[in-house]
Image 1 (cartoon, helix red, strand yellow):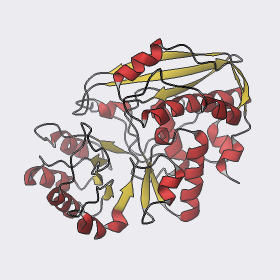
Image 2 (cartoon, rainbow, N blue to C red):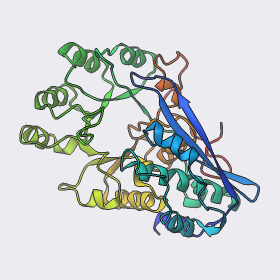
Image 3 (tube, rainbow, N blue to C red):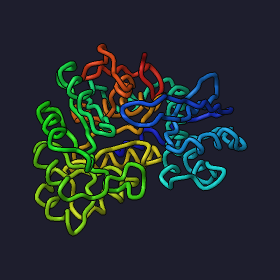
Image 4 (cartoon, rainbow, N blue to C red):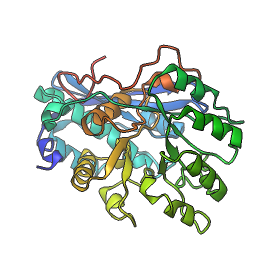
Length: 350
């Protein structure tokens, strides 16, 4: 049975909703983070989601826009269909992908609320068991690049792996320090962030050096150019995709069937689309690992919960929030992370 069939007819009663701006200061070599927590209420329960739109101005505009007419009695599916008819932004968002991010925030909150109103949780509704989640830590190395925090964490946290973003500024010393840890599991080449502040370009020499230095790591989101095509073809079994994936069709339409993909729930926008992706990956044997988008609120638990249900043993980029601090404390949680679903809803116990 398709996964979504277990969720689509959940009754859902909404009386209103609240928004809360969440902020976190500068962390892990990058700027601060702003997100919005969404809380749907109804029948004495609440359901929470997190809007991970990257532009702070889009969050502030959301707080100021007229309230959406969400009150009513629905099923999860009819609410999702209705949500698709609404303008979730007062004006064009700064980034087109933001539409899916905000849609997911409302849909995940609705899923949480519907499950709580039904007196069940996501694991039980899907007939799955949450397992401890193996996670990796993702961190940019700053300018100039400095691998010392990752080197320290590799010694401090047994079994911790890393997802890193190779950049042209990485010299042989930085690459050697990272390689010596033996902990790099994913190379995020960010080849599909063209024109953004995290666009490293498509440096064929950097690709070659990184791919050779980390022979067991996933090679995520390479940009295929005449200069990089041969390098990527030689490691095709290690290539995975992330940023280009917003619909199931983005996976099925890839030129080559991937060995693995990075599943970021907020990229897919709708619960139905995400469940269809999980169905397809299990049917085809394509491996999945989970990813985050700087969640600092309830969305962090959501991505950990989904990883626990669908790909607990993968190099999931869902590390607890303390890892995002500029200097993670000595007592950061260890991997694998014990995941305990709450008795009801789409959330974890504290």
